Structures are given as structure tokens and as C-alpha cells.
Length: 136
Length: 136
DNA sequence: CCCAGTTTTTGAGTTATTCTAAATTCAGAA
DNA sequence: TTCTGAATTTAGAATAACTCAAAAACTGGG
Image 1 (cartoon, chains in turn green, brown, red, orange):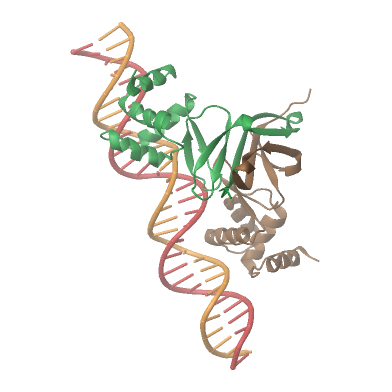
Image 2: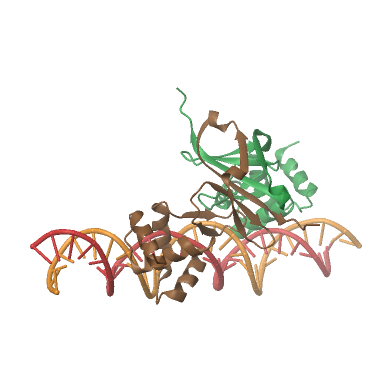
């Protein structure tokens, strides 16, 4: 099955009409990209799609978010929003040198607290920030 | 010792010239406020200071940040920036009902991971999001 | 093929912040 | 004091990242 069809199916599966623009955006953000910004999505789609407006980029990203197949992550250091197709519970590591954002599976981090006594916790967001160690 | 003098001393201590505007802003963000936005700082200062520009509000907040006596926190849900005078290691709890932000001392949260093997971690930012339990 | 509903587009509007350059104020020297 | 260069403040323009509104284009079911 080709990539095109994979995306069309994924969109339909999520209850989204598979328009040409959505396929182009979806293909990039759901299969190819690694935490892109809206601008980067536009740039990437521009390379393979004749003409798409910024509003459609945002509309589509929001549609994917609402459908539960994409997540917007607001980075606390820069304030930029990037889109994350990893829908498993996970946290983020920000490499301060390269600016790269890496996913960290939730099970790699153990978290203990007693907030549950007082709150119904709906979500925990963690950002680790640092630099890669120079091995010696 | 009066409040005015406390702030003047705190500013000087941090190596910041104590101008009238900085005293007014500092007094609010370092002593009175609880996670205010820049707009809220302006509104509060306007009540006690004849005339201050938004640029000065931002300039001063940045100056305090660089001096290490104030922290900007970018909230991941709204994207708004609030200023935090708590310089101890701590995390944040966001009450989704009221929008309130509460500080959580770092020692109330135990965090275990093996990222140290690969990274020099400079900072860990955690946002808990949820609602207060209705006691029954 | 037709039509109601959905999607896309353009361009203007918004919000929060930053920039620029001029005006003001300040701290230390004389 | 008075001066002077540096620091600070200001207004207002500029920017970035969206969001909105209304018209135009498309789509899928009948």
C-alpha cells in the first residue's frame, strides 16, 4: 500500500475528509516530520503541493489535533509551537546545543508525588533541558 | 525597614540601578504578585506610579530575569508568559477550572530517570494539570 | 448532474512582544 | 554644583504567530 493511501485511510479512520491539502499536510506531519513548526509544515508542503495557504495549514493541524492524531506542544523555552505525531504518553528532552527535541517514553521516567490526594491530574508535561555529554 | 527600602536593597544587591520605575515594578513582582502576566504588572504599577510604558515593563522584567531574581514561565496550555519570583527549584500545578498556577516545591516530587547517562541536565520543568478534587 | 454542506483562500485583524531612535535621567568626575 | 557620557525610559512602529470573516471553490450523497 502506498504512502498516499496510508494517509487517506488514516484521515478517514479519524473521521476527517481526505482533501488534497489535508493529505499533503497529513503526509508530512503524520509520517515524515519530527516536531515541525507550522512554518516548517508549510515549507514542506509547498515543495509537493501546488498552492496552499497558511490558514489551511493551521486549519488542518487543528483538525488533526481535534481528531486526536496529532498533538501541539508549546515549548517553554522559546514559546514556539511544534507538532508531535507521537500520541503515546511521553515527555520531551530539549538539547540546548542543537535545539533538537527528543521524545522520551513515559516509562523511562518514574514520577512520584502526592498530588493525587488533592487533585485529579489530567496531564503531566515534562521538559528536560540540557546538553549531550561529551563521552570521555 | 519599609517596603520601599527592601526593594531598593534587593535591586542593588542584584546589581541593578534602583530607578523609580524599577522600584515600582520590582515591588509588585518581587513582593506582591502571584504569577502575573506583563499586562497585569503594568496594570498594578499604573495604580501607584504616574506613568510607565509597556516597554519599560518588559525591560525591567528582563533585567530582573538576567539578574537572577525573577523567572519567566511560559505556560504550555495558553502560551502566556507569567513571572515567578520563587527562585527555589519548583514545579507548577495548573488548576484547569480556575486557571490558577500553584508552585510545588521540588522535594514534593520524586523524579527518577537515566537521562544523566547521556545528558548534562540543566533544568527540568514540570507542569501538572488537573482539577481540585471535590471532597466527599 | 445538483445542491447543501464542507473546505480553502485572501486579506485584514489581533495579541504579545521587540525594536528603534529620540528624550530623559543618572552617577561620578571636576 | 555642574558637566558629561552612560544608562534608562519612552512612544510608536515593527514583528511573529496566529485567528477571523466572508467569499470562492470543492465534495459526496442523492
